[in-house]
Image (cartoon, rainbow, N blue to C red; front, side, top):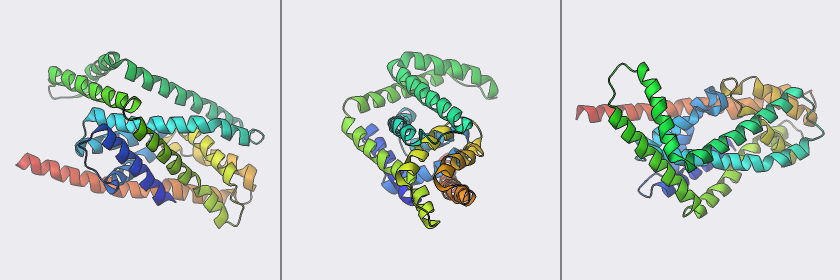
Length: 296
């Protein structure tokens, strides 16, 4: 199930990239490798925030502009946010009589607020590209003091303006001409999240328990909202406690420890190991290519 989840994610990324840049030539395996490489940093950073820069960087190395790559990756996040926000009322309805743990209630409330705030900022950035440029130029001027080498400000400003324009153009493309592609990617979003959400049910079946498909699906939606909070790397501790709190009302406390261990092994540590391997291989090949170009 986890492998299918990776390939569905890779397929969605490929479709978004191809829609943004018609010249982009990348197969499903190529986009899946980028997805796999991003799993490591996503797993060791709060809110899984480390994965996006990796995907943007690798897409840029594959020929996309930074603005186009950013639009494709943020398009993924937008689809994910829309899917989760649609599922949250259903998940709350299923668990309305079960969520008694104050920590989980608080986590869900904060998670929903963060989700909505991110969407508002995202829409604001698209509608106000000039203000986005001004903010990025201001941010760059503040960060410049940490760099020793002299930086050509004209080149930096031109680069920021160009990339923001590319990003804005790509997002407007999705809103107008690329609606069909965005809709297909929405279907893939439902499929790939649903595939991932089925993993706990498969674990429950393996333990000789009922799969609790609807309840487990709802629990995964609520868990995802909690995990998105910027707390600890990989939301360690928060995730385990939330899984135990959500699933103990379904399967009792006797097997909850074994279930949590298997769940984290498959959905976190497996991703971490595979992500580290692919990230090392891809970044090593990128570094080798860059060195060859310098020598030439």
